[in-house]
Amino acid sequence: MRVLLLDGHPDDGRYSSYLLQVYENALPSEAVVEKVAVRDMQFSPVLRFGYAKRTEWEPDVASLAERLDACDHLVVSFPMWWGSEPAELKGLLDRLLLPGFAFAYHANDLRWDKLLQGRSADVIATMDTPPFFLRLIYGNALIKRWKRQVLGFCGFKPVRVLACGPIKNGGAEARSEKWERQIKKLARSIKPSSGHTKRLRLDRFLHRDD
Image (cartoon, rainbow, N blue to C red):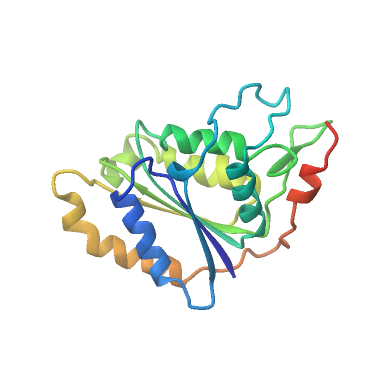
């Protein structure tokens, strides 16, 4: 099993990165693990022309695309800021999950093909918002978006999301033991995506005609 860990915090040594390390340490010994920190990548987070014009990938984005294509399981960890992931991680999603690689719209209807099927994912989101507040007041918008509009949209299934909060005012210290137990359980219970075979998409995407 190939596992790709993506650290989405723009600063080093932060709590979301620590929780990702807890996840890595709990993975089965037979797992082939690769880790990428978005903060260490050199790329523009702006999809300048949308999908109207091809924007070539920088080497770091191309390298991540290769690892994503090869992985069986993806793990993303980040802090929730203003209800979403940090801007650099959001920009990476814009640049990386392109039509033809991650998904493909149908020409004559509103459906689409989920090109990254056959892979599963876990998301760890730290936040100052209590999870019950996130659910009752905000309708679990962050969780639904990552499960349905981001990873699920591209074919990842299942997508499990762990919301860790609140972090501030001693919340991390008080709840860290509980969250670490939950994260270790996630890492030790990865199940291959069922119902679909993983297909490598990158080579065809890179050699497409625009």
